[in-house]
Length: 183
Image 1 (tube, helix red, strand yellow):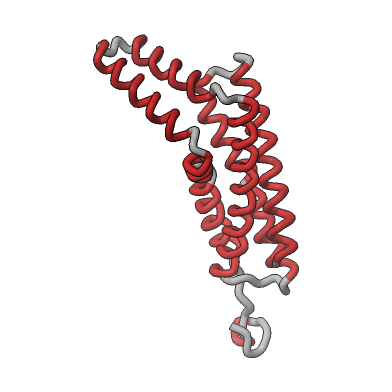
Image 2 (cartoon, rainbow, N blue to C red; image 1 turned 60 degrees about the horizontal axis):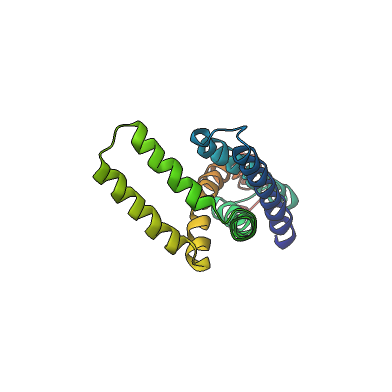
């Protein structure tokens, strides 16, 4: 199990890291607008988690063609954790070394969006204060890691649960046309 989890987790993590870097680069140079960046980002995360399905399937096929739902969930969650760790590590490098102005630009876009919607001066000032407080908090590496981990992990859990439900296969008994004594 260790080899399968490690291989599929690292491949998934590499895919999510590369897609994150590409999408951030495209947003930074204006090819992709920031309003669509979130959709593109979560699509990239989902695509990287397709490796969870293939990892569970490979584990099942290497173990006599059977896997319980619980074992499939365990395999999928381990792959997800490795992939998320790669995603977080990539973001930490990007945020603190390549794009330390990320929150500043995000805050400016948020305030501009409020202005375009006709928000009051008080609402804009409150949002600016909120964004300044967020930046102070987000510049703490531990908070940054935790918040970044929360982005892909729920997607990985959903993909794991769906994959485990689809791929579970138990051994059949003699009455069912399978192996004697197996459940």
